[in-house]
Image 1 (tube, helix red, strand yellow):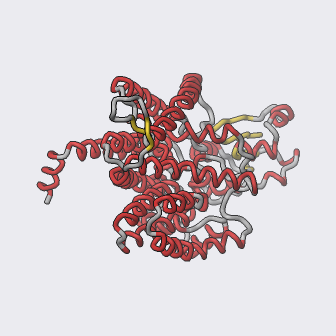
Image 2: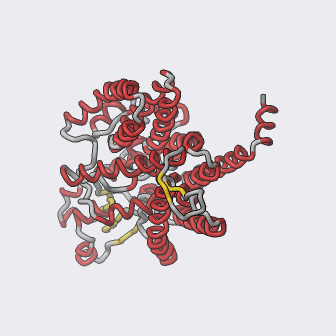
Image 3: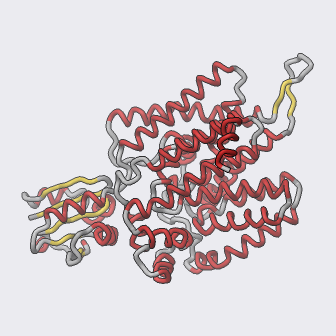
Length: 485
């Protein structure tokens, strides 16, 4: 069996290319996976894994979250513990599996193996994908289930096998249960099925089962008078859409403090990627439907083939959910925000980008653009691996524990309490809410909160520094800490 697999790899050049991409992508997802500590949402994940199974479900529902992701990783964490590596490892594995399923999807979509290899390569080295692969949250699983859903949908429409339809139903219901922000993706699939004009009845039946499976979670969200989206997001504007365009590849995640060199890289990447990516995507879509006449004349005609179908799937996957979310944002409430809420659209972005590149007729220009894109992806990776991106609760709490003296207390909010519960060494330390502080009780206090929360209670801290000569200000990524003797 092993010998047969080895011989197949030796004979198939494309398979060797994929294995190289797959192994490199897997390495990137494991590399520095615990360099940064858990941020607040990851801390909640880790603490949930310490509860009994039913208490965990109750706790997550009480926090307004679907418990599906936590149910998936619960057995794993019961075996391997709740350390940083243990709670992040399921996401790493899910993201690695996504590379394989994405490759299967591209093989289903494209006849040109250059597009298959290039899009899979972009997906495997994207700093954004690696960021969520190294996060103890549901988003790596969201990406995996969304890719599976499109893959099984395309197969089901061609093969009409009930087992394939079942896989489609389960994978689609799965990403619904992982994140309510993925619901607009189903509109892209509906529009595609309507355009294909086949198997309406089969799809309607499958869609009915998906809705039926999601009824309990939909009832839960409606009973809370929300659909699971985030109400505190700011109104959308033109820059919101621009960030989506270049963000999936070259601008991985918000950084708290970036050095001058990094800022230059990011600024250059923004401008160039905005021009280059937009042009490539538009060109690729047009070229997928237009061909030159074979009669020697410079005439063009519209046509439809497998490449056109692949372009339609990719465009609908990316654009239809954005249109639906934009409409909802304008009519009801903003639902655009951090990239985690649109991350499920990223695979379509890599597909469209690769289509645009490979539709370029001049080989020298195509190679130059591929090289430039790879440079940008690598710069994003360098930024990701070298610039802190998460709240440094681990460092802040370790510092407090090393310097906390008898009689001193910690002031913080719920995030501080949960972070200390996970990282703190002493079980006797109590954390006081900031609203009960007064000038007389402020001495002997360690004040630690996320920057925005700290500023809400204490302003920028200037009054503390002004009124108390002995105040000590300490900075940790995403956090603000003051100590008053």
